[in-house]
Image 1 (spheres, one colour):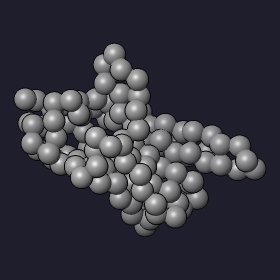
Image 2 (cartoon, rainbow, N blue to C red):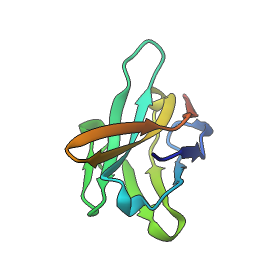
Image 3 (spheres, helix red, strand yellow):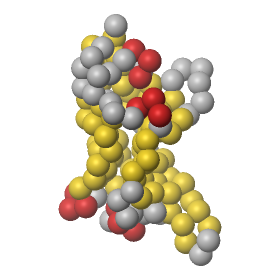
Image 4 (cartoon, one colour):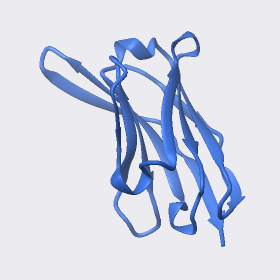
Length: 119
């Protein structure tokens, strides 16, 4: 199991930047994939970006070039740097850990952090 705590959300004007943090309760290198998801009101939760234990990254098409996922193994923390924010980026952002053991995958979620982008 793993506990995840997100932080860094807030209110920002369009065009601004925010950096989200997700602190894990265990080594992030023991987690197969760590990712950022978001859920806007009335919409389904969607992938923003993720990073594997090996360091491979994956981004949703709409975030490529604006958002960057990174990690700090010493702090067991994954970050999401968000630049050129748009009002449509407004959502609750969640951190998710996927751990696969014996061929069985389990997902763990943080409590989420609100990001609001004003126009």
